[in-house]
Amino acid sequence: MANYTAAEKAAIEYTDVQEALNMAQDEYDIKSSELANKMYVELKDHFEERAGLIAAEGAGQFWWRAFGSEKSPMYEHVDPMDEKVFRALTSFNIRAKGTGLEIIAEFSANPFFSETKLWRLGRHSDDTESSCSNITWKPGTEKIVAKSFLNFFSNAIDPEQEEEIFHALCDDVFLNPLDYVVEEKA
Image 1 (cartoon, rainbow, N blue to C red):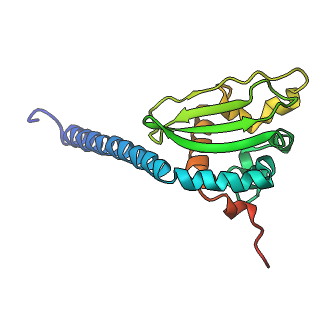
Image 2: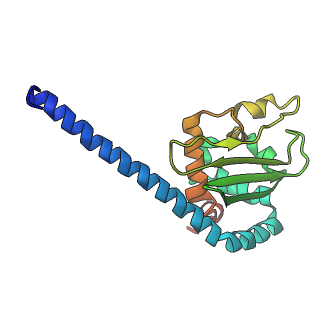
């Protein structure tokens, strides 16, 4: 470093420190993803018990209220037209799968798309590509397709929006849906 200017030496030192920070962040992301998976495995029985209670009420109605509440982090990602699609929702679940989390929405036969199961597999770390189902939209559903939250379950979604929705669902809405479903008493 003898032939470098003070500014060049500082830039080299900054780069070294930044690389160390990036490596530490990558390590944290991996550990965070592993911890999230472990939590979902350990809470599986509770999620299944809750799903049974929700099914008694009607899964579509329950999850629409959780997603569509103005307090919900999903509020800006759902369109009023999605409420019609949610009526066909029979189950909504997140489970650990391999090193990632799989978000699964199951539907009864409906006039909007052909599939009865939509899914997206992702990880909490930002650099991992996700995989997902495809949606075969039925003719006449163009108004719903354009803005539908369900595009999250296909490749028709912006990667930034995909990541935002993934975290909102895995870290908040699925874990604490009653925060958005139950009306607060004034």
